[in-house]
Figure 1 (tube, rainbow, N blue to C red):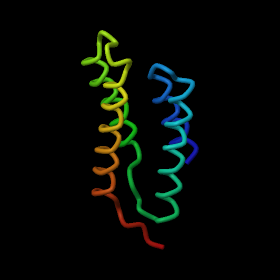
Figure 2: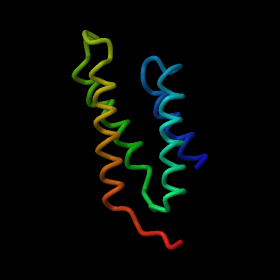
Figure 3: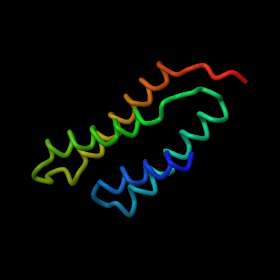
Figure 4: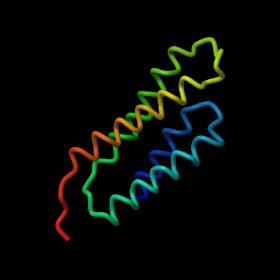
Length: 97
């Protein structure tokens, strides 16, 4: 749980406005870890993290002029994270109670 929270915080620190985004992504990582542990889903939480990172990278490529003030990077990160979470949820392992 600590590694996931820390990892998501590091991913958030890669974006502009890291003072706001890093704690937000760390909170998302903590919430995902708690959900995974409490519900015994057995999800791979690295997929949403990589989705956030790659989606933000792809969005920032389209926002090279900062015309939208990083909105495309944040939108790409959101879409990438949601797709990663969905893929992780679909491929979860059943953890015995």
